[in-house]
Amino acid sequence: MPTSNDMNQEHHAVLDSMGNYCCDGGLVVAHVCDCHLLQSKPIDKDDLKHAEDLAACPDPGVMPNRLAMVITELNELRPRPSCVLFGGDMTERARPQEWDQFFQIVQTLEIPYFLTLGNHDHDETSTNWPRTRRVICRGLQRFDAGRTPPDSVAESGLYYAVQLGTWRLLVVDSLFDVPLDRIQRDWLTQELAGNCVPTILSIHRPFVEVGNFMDRYRMRDPELLRLIAGSECVKVVLSGHTHKARSCMYSNMTHLVSPSIYEGIDDTPGYRLVCLRDGGFAFTAIRRLNRSPAAVRVDYQIDPIEPYDGDLFCDSQ
Image 1 (cartoon, helix red, strand yellow):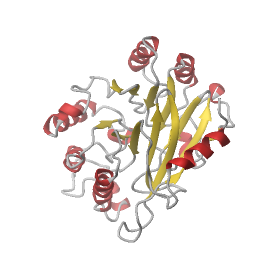
Image 2: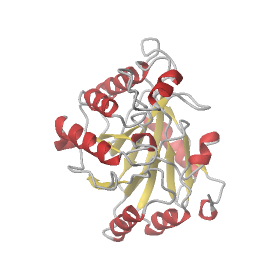
Image 3: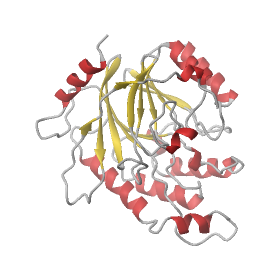
């Protein structure tokens, strides 16, 4: 098995001398997280959080503009990524107008895409899930749902499996529950007990720490981690939530936490590319969005994979 240093030396070969992205084949996933689209108007007087959200966000127009810019970049990228995985918190409060705006922007994407929901994509108490479910189903049906599994959204959340060439993508909905709810855990157990193909697990809240205050809200679920590690199928875990990037190895899995495309927390905004070869992880690179797109060319910085120095199996809430 290659060491992290060997892997990082290999990764540099996929960027040219100017730092431009190139790929030698395989599956390329663009991971886009934490846009936090906010309903700017009209103010919903029955929504006690709406005025607070607007007061905390001086320019709600930044968020849709940033998402639209990222989609334009991905459409123009050559070779194009195999798919785009939206990693959660695409809305601020899962308001219908916020989801409608998301799907309106995403309909310009010329690449297959998949959704993972974050905690902001649900009502804080999860009591609004029936409304959110209706809005998501409507959005998927309205904007080319044929390329965007699942065709229907489960009563308890958004979780599903899809085959991506020689890889499989498993998406779970971490909501606010710690640990993962029993319905999804049973479903995931069944998925991992079947034909074991190389698997990407998408979950909004990461297991690993990134080094900012959001670590207190990460996924503290040793039982779930034992489940996915014991299957030997899951090779890559993709997360967001923390608004700070980290790439590390833990329990023979590559944990990739992606930055927010809108606002960083002790980090610069951006999104991630992940390149996977048959049976294994190849490299990951991050596109930083710290300047006006007109002022800097689009390039991608290799994100080195480091060993994780904690013990998540002994983690406690």
